[in-house]
Image (cartoon, rainbow over the protein chains, first blue to last red):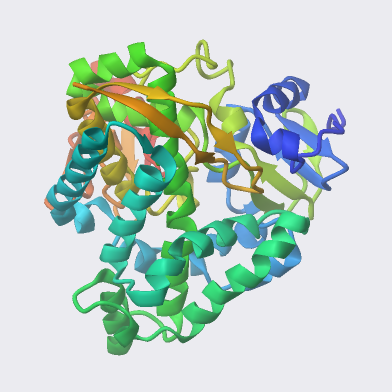
Length: 389
Length: 63
C-alpha cells in the first residue's frame, strides 16, 4: 500500500492557530500521511507515534528540525543526537533535572506559586499570560539555572525564538534566527561567573572543570535548559488557566479533590499539546500501517493528533480532569522523552494547587493566539474577574 | 511474567510507582525497584500498565 497524501500545509497560519481539525483529517487518512507541500511524512495516530518515539534506530533525532540550519545549530545537544552518544549527553542534562535532584525545590516552588496567585486574586483581574504563564516559569528557571542580568531579560524572546526556528524556513523562522543566534552566541561563550553562585548552572560548570562532563558541553546544556524549557512550559501554564476557565465544572472537580491535580495536568497536556510538530529522520525504509516510508524521509510527529486519537482515548475531544491520561504524548516518550518533565510537573502542580485553593471561578475574555511554527500557545488571555474561593 | 528494569535509564519520574505501587517501588534515589522477579498472575495487568507509562522506556515486561 502506498502512503496516503494530503495537501494540508502543516505550517500555514490557519493550521497553526487551530490544528485539531487538520489533525483529525490526517489521522483518518492514515497513521502516516505524506504532505508533499511540506516535504514531510506526518505521524498521526497514537500507536504509530509511540512506536516511532521508542525506535531511535529507525527514527533518528539528527533531524528534529525542519530546516538544515537549525539541525546544524543543534548538533552536539542530546536533543539532536542518537544513542550511544545521546545517552551520555542526556545523563549530564538530567543529572540536575531528575525528580530526585529537584526534590528539595518543591516547597520553594509551591510557596512561589502560592504568593503569585494570592497577588493575582487580590487584584481581581489580570492578564494570565504575562502575569502568570510567563512570569512563573521564567522566575523558576532563572533562579534554578542561575540566570542574572541581561540574560534574565532575554529568556522569553530567546526561548520563543529557539522553538520558532525549528520550523521550516518560512518568514517566522527567518525573523527568529537572529534572536536564536543571540542565544547560541551567549551559550557558546557563557562562563561559570555569568551564573549565580550555588545555582544548577554554576554546578554544571563545576562538573566540567572537574572533568566529570566533556569540555564544551556545559554551554550546550544551558542552551537546552533555556531553549526547550521555557516556551513549552509557558504554553502549558497558559493552557491550564484557559481550560479551567472554559470548563468551570472540571475546575470544580479539582477544587473539591486535590488528589486530581496531577490527573488534571495530564489532561491539560493531552488536550492541548504545547508542541505542534517535531522531526525525525527515517534511516531505513519503515513500514507503518502497511505503507512504506522511504529511508531519508523527513518525519513530523504530531503529538496533538496522537493525543486525540479515538483508537486510544474514549471521547478524545472532551476535556475531563478525571481521565488521568498518564500515557499522553506531549512529553514525547522513550530515550528522548522530555528531560524537564519532572520540573514541569512541579511547576504545574504548584500552580494548579494554588488556583484550586484560592480561586472559585475564573471569568475570561477573548484569548488571542499568534501562529507559531512549533509551540502552540496563547498570546493573551484576559482574566476579567476572579471569583475567590 | 517478568519485569526488565533498566536502572541506568530510569530517571526517577516515579510514574510506574504512582499507578502500580503494588508492583513498583522506588529506592532512596527514586530509582525503580520492581517488587517481584516473577509477577504474580493477579498483578500482571498492573505490571504492564506501570511499564507502559514509563516516560523514558526504562521498563519492559516479558512473558
